[in-house]
Image 1: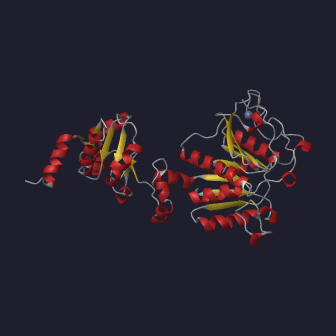
Image 2: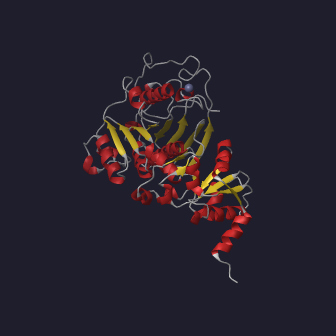
Image 3: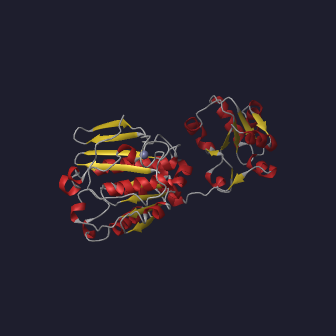
Length: 394
Ligand SMILES: [Zn+2]
């Protein structure tokens, strides 16, 4: 006689362990347990157990190994009523998960029991299509995409580094991009500053950047600051952003960005370029060195040729700016290892990347024990662009 659905469900339930909502709540409140929701996306939108991981039942076997790597960590699996979760629990057991229970009565019983739940803010259908390649990656997914959409990143400079960084961060769905730049688009910029176009020569760079970003992704709010970054405006400005991307080409601004980021405890994503060579690193105060740990003082002006004098290969800032943008995205998502305490150098002629380990300078004038608490007494003299010699590589 063929097996009926009823038989199959009975067999499945006898092969797994079910818990009622009260027991599930006790387990979850004790901690060290993964709560797994196997309902469909449209059901999730009505509410989800707080802290639950979501994998729709139809994708469970395909995706679970990537998402739940520890097969011995206890799992409470639930659906709406307790049937799909019973089949899911059986599958998980067959896949080698050793401690799985199914919530009898599902999410409805959970709510009646008074367990914690929340209504997730969900992506719109348009956003789900736009970011579908992100949603497929377990480390990003819908939660990660929402983090990107909620993030506020300030790009200092809409030039060689800021252009590719801004375009890719906008494409990835970073929801708020601030751009500060006092300059207008010049035709000598177009060799590398790909956010600007020939017909916008003479236009303010922040306005040109805004046009390109909004054309690329209407989800992104662009805040243009058409001004120079100064000691007077830097702290107020940075306070509104989560992460600062340094795309400047002069030492005075680099020191200013560094010092403000140390004072405000904001990540500073650093990049610099010179002819065929680039560098990138991530400064997070307290976790690694700051810019002044590496370069305590700017080089004398006669040793720092300006970009206009030295030149730069137009493709180089694309590589470095995208390394910076990738660092930004990783920090927002909380994944991977940021370039904290590591300086990445890139030699375009040899196509060679190297990593230099960097250590904190215990006597650093900005992040050491005698660090100032304001910018008032610091001089920021402008010298031109270049990559200075490393003071403190180990
Ligand atoms: Zn320092």
